[in-house]
Each structure stands twice: as C-alpha cells, then as structure tokens.
Image (cartoon, rainbow, N blue to C red; front, side, top):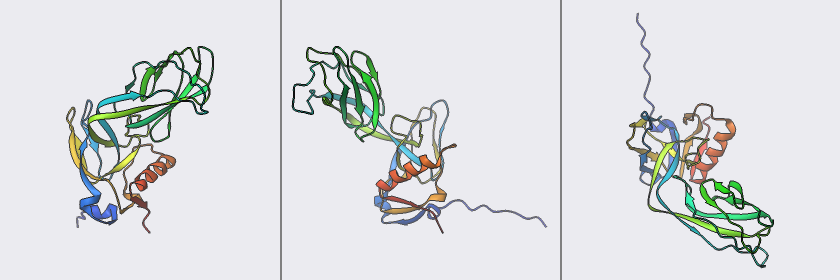
Length: 232
C-alpha cells in the first residue's frame, strides 16, 4: 500500500503564542526590492528595517565638556549614508593635539559609529572632514550632528548582521513567505510590535547566524514588546 506524507502549511498560530490585538501588533510593510534577483522573505523571518528618503544633516557648534573654550575648527559638509539612522549623532574629541586630534562618532542609539582624525576624511554612517582651528580641540569637546529625513519610508529586509544601513537591527517578524521582485519593492505583513509572545523555535534566521547574534536580535524584538520564548 502506498504511503503518503502530508505536510501541513505553517499557520500563524505556530509562531504566535499570544497577541494582544492583531490590528495593533501587525502592519503592512514595504519589502526591499531585489538586487540582481528577487529578494526572498521566508515565513517567520526576523526582519531589519532600512529608513530611506533624502537625509537632512545639521551640524551644531562645538561645546566644551568642562565649560572652557572649545576648539573652533570648522566641519566640512556632512552627508549621511543611505539607511543611516535618524537622530542625534555625537562627535566627541578624545585626544587633543596641535593641528591634529582624534574623535569618535556615537550613533543615536549610543553605539560607536567609528573613530576619525582631524584633517582626515571620516567615512561612517556620516561622512565629512573635520578641520583644525586657531583653538585646538581638547578632550571632551563635542558637537551634535542631527540627521532627519524628508518623506521617510521604512523598507524591510531579512535581518543581516553584517549590515550597516539598519537591516542589522531586528525590527519585526515577517508573517507570510513572499518575495520582492528584482528592482521593485514588494509588500508584506510584519509582526511589528507587542504585546505579543512568539515561539523561538519557529523563527527563521540567516544562514550562519550565531547564538550571540540571535540573542541580541531577540532582545531587540523584546524592546518592541515582542517576547520570544521557547515552547515546552
């Protein structure tokens, strides 16, 4: 006698153990177009989010952390990469020096964007050259560089832990398997916020994702109110 194996399609109940209100927790999203081929969005894949739109960058004046006289070197035109976080970046001078100096850039979420040197082009989420001035920068001098976007659009992509444009940060979970065509954005449904509880064993991760990376992303989901729990 022939034996047939029937595989049941995955249902949302396989992932979602609890959800306060689907109308609140879920939302339709723009799925990032494929590049050279269709971009696949596996069901229950953890998603990152890329913020698109024209960046408006405003660099503030340098202030002293100690109340003294800060350095007065001018900052060149500041541009922001595609997908750079919105918000306030902080440029902090670490090492003083005549006609020199070292600074770091902190992102709006507090993470380190990178370290740069005076009179050398800086290339991170922000891009600029910091000039020296008649007053040298001293340790603790800082300035705020604000990034906002005109007509911003959030586009989702499967989480990519090597990304630098936002897709490296967990922003939701894809609820239905789909794809975005090559060169054309698609659409899908995202578990975007809680209160909700989802089953850890049902989540789809990129090939090669480590336990440490999954833990960080899980905590990012939980910051959105999406609690990740193992069944049993």
